[in-house]
Length: 338
Image 1 (cartoon, one colour):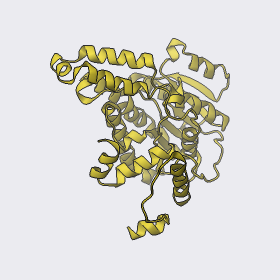
Image 2 (tube, one colour; image 1 turned 180 degrees about the horizontal axis):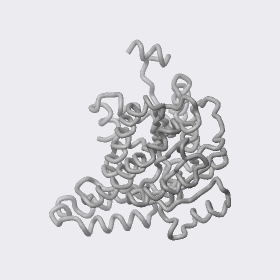
Image 3 (cartoon, one colour; image 1 turned 60 degrees about the horizontal axis):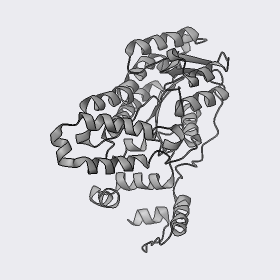
């Protein structure tokens, strides 16, 4: 405790927050003592030059914005898109840039054959394949919701196939090229890869797995000069349109219809509807600005000393993550769960 007090230089008396203003002042005080999660001071970054990177999940959201941003930094971007063969609007916009440094690729990370084909396309388009590929950003992901007894095994497997095994498949396929370049692997995890939450077990399981995979890979790649970073975004639902009332309704209807009668009777429709109402409140929640995430990935790809983990999230989630990962569960559960 003495070390903690010295480090943070905070008053030891109990803090009482009677209004939002008091709470904000406390957070500002805290931010002066610790590194801010969203305004981290990054060292100067070299430009992309003629380096090439593969980014998965570029149809929309983080991946789409990141592909355009990295292109603007001078990178050659291989943008993996799930819906390229369907002529998705995001793919068309990237293609309409008509740049020889922006190449969209059909890529479903669940399908090994599409990953292998993407790697071949990358090799064919690299200026010097012997120098390898500078980076891979595993961004492709899906999410869902539902308490454990409400969630089917098919749903667990579907989310894992994309978020976890898709990350592993893509990384393994790219590693020979990454090793040649002594490049970077950047895996998009989540704050829910560090702390669990109710009704999110399919997503949390996969992101916890991404964290473990990234740590193991970082240890193994160190002798080869390859750096591995994890980016753990907070709540960016509003920015990425991850959930909409229509999508939540569709998921909920399918979930309820597939439940065993015994589970329906035990929980009841009222309980189910109450949980559904909570999920609907999340549709427009979180930050609408993806810049902190984009900046984190860019730093991980360009800095000579990238961080192991990046935490682009607002203060509430950053503090909650510290509490839930550092304090005894009996305390953090009482604060946030029960």
